[in-house]
Amino acid sequence: MVDQGELRQKAKEVISREDVRRLIGWKRGTYGFEAAPAVIKDPSEADELVFDPTCVQNPASFVTLEEKPPLPRGVEPDLRKVGVFAKGCDSRALIQQMVEQAYERDHIVVIGIPCRGVIDHRKAEKLFGDVTPDLVEISGDKVVIEIGGEKREVAREDVLMAKCLRCRYPNPLISDVLVGGEVEKFADDDFSDVDEFEKKSPAEKWEFWEKEFSKCIRCYSCRNVCPMCYCPECVVTRLKPQWTRRSVDLSENTSYHIERSWHLAGRCIECMECERVCPMDIPIMTLNRKLTRDVKELFSYEPGTDVEASPLLTSYNPQDPEEYIM
Amino acid sequence: MSDEFEPTIIAFLCNWCSYAGADLAGTSRIHYPPNVKIIRVMCSGRVNPLFLMNALQQGADGVLISGCHPGDCHYLEGNYYSRRRFVLMHRLLEHIGVHPNRVHMSWVSASEGEKFKEVVSEVRDKVKEIGPMNQFGRRQINW
Image (cartoon, rainbow over all chains, first blue to last red; front, side, top):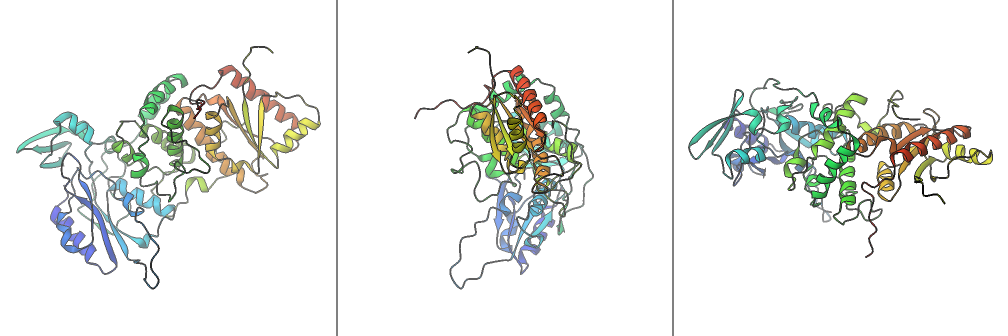
């Protein structure tokens, strides 16, 4: 459990710095099992910041989201740094953004928080209904949730996000300030879910995706929340050339999902935000996981682990696999 | 005309090797299946994986991407990038349920007219075996 006092103290120190203009973190949400993202600009606001297993949202998404309107003549741009809280998975998003040169390392101040897992609101709502917990913490291999003065203990598998049950990077990979001590690695990833899905025949796979893709309402939430989707103009909404028509039918939905997951090939850092925000419960990560597994298997490449790495698809190795080439 | 299914195959050929290879097949009077519709691109590295998706959407039954042999690229490294991309795209489409034999990639140089014929025949046979692509083809919309 991260000490909230220490967290706020460190946040205050960072935001008080002369060269930091804002800080992105989490504050208590108004309802349900999710904390809300918070952007603070003043040390006095630091007391509203929190960190507990309800802080699911990936703050790395906000770093690239900032609008940069043209400035009036004579006004200097504000080039001061942005502070950002980062769990293990969030730090991978930050690294991958820097690998793609979205910004320089000097642009951000990372406040790393070792994390032992976050709550999946779907699982939690199934167990507890539509309630707002007073306290959520992880102790040992149990999750303690206090609702209306009553404490309940649940197994980790029952409420935590799937990504946390296979988390390989609980500690932030980069951090300037670290809150709390590092935690020990508690899980591993064997991609057994991908292997399981791959046993299906092409017809069965398509039957599955046909059902899932036809649910899609194309709200583009998965794209908007993704820390890796920060192009100023997205290929999906582009009109010239128009790769995907706007009509919501199976053909266009399929092409949208192929485009989205393809553009994350070798970039997806598996924060599972896309699946979390999906209003239609489409298992989007099944596509991303497949690509992550293949990228790891074929090119021994893992996105978001090394700031010095070059992006996967803008580099090559003459010895790359040629498995299906005639 | 027989009622037998004949697949439509879209081939993206690189200008410097594979297109010249296809040209050689033509000038040498080598017969190859007429199912293949050739689109000439300057390099196999030019082929965006979305071209492939779009071809399948618009009614192609199979897609072939062909470029220079590794190391022979006119632009030195285009086919290396292309190789990386398509191995992933191929696997992604397979994961979605598109039969893996619908998408092919080959290296055909300008002197390999005979190989071009073999590649195209093989692709035709494989795609014919699977049957028409009716998964996410666009429906005709009359506005």
